[in-house]
Image 1 (cartoon, rainbow, N blue to C red):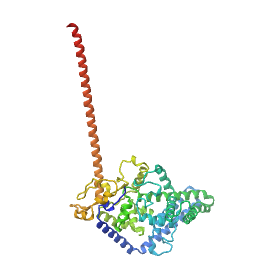
Image 2: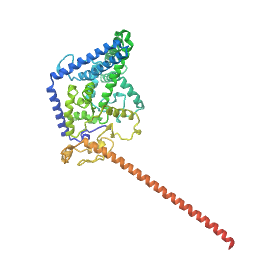
Image 3: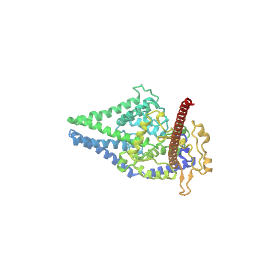
Length: 487
């Protein structure tokens, strides 16, 4: 199951977590107080660059019947759409630039170049996802309603189609997100699925109609004889933007280390625990300045989830301080190359398409979903082992209290380095314990095989001995019968 008690999983006391929260508040406050002209200049230049790229791309497509013009125009338009979607639309709609009080660059007025209305996305994403991040049955972005991404979700036969559904979602990502946000908006407003003339449906159809008309009717028609090649270029640019946005989002939310949580954890969650849940429920991918910019700085997904309304151009510098806190509290800072992070998410998509009976690991120590029970039977110094038992009653009764932890000096402090040994150390120890368990099981199987082989050898020898004795007995009988004739 997912994490039920974040303190036990993170190997931190309540006091530790609240101190961590205060230190993260300090990081936020320092950046907020330093926002100024440099940041305003960054976003205005980004908007200007994006618009010039789009204008250049669309102008080049007037000659798109020539191969070089089609390739150049499509590339320029693809880059422009990615920047608008990732660094502008997503981040402005998060309110990252509201502090400027610019009516154009404001979360209440910006409408992005995507199928779904910004208003529906802001409610479904900004509120639901960033409040209930990775809480099973509360965060609808866990699999977007069509993919099973944790074993906490019951397997259904439809999940067998996940590999195909994943490809469709990637290619049509803007439509998938738009329909996902529409469904959440209607659900929260208590509007039935078949109420076709509801206000959310009208908003969606109006926005989607404008997008389809712009990319597939108006701009192709403006290029006259080149309308067919322009139509293909627009479709290709949308596809490139969709695939890139899909990859960035999946690398930040679904690789190993992006943990899931239960509603029990959320019920009495403190401010510090909310911060900790964002840290443990998100993942980064390694990126330089260019890739970071093209991803809307969502290569720093951990920082984005900690500070979703802080300008994204500040995430690189904030990540240095967040890493330092992870080192201080011995917490994992989940990151890796873009390829690695996506392949981990890709593996989970295909693995969880199968029923649980075909999976080797349990729901507590699977790489894509783990919980505090992952450490059952693994005893760290001064820490009681936690037997794996069903239900939450055992956790409430037996998990160590803050008083016990304080009395036993846990989290453990390494006497040599002076550093605490928390979750990161526990995860490393658990990994080694699993390897040792696998080696032990392999050795037991080898010994059992040897014992069976020895048993078979002994039984075979006994059968041979019995056969020899039987043959000797028959020979003696024949000898005695022959000798009686001469007696």
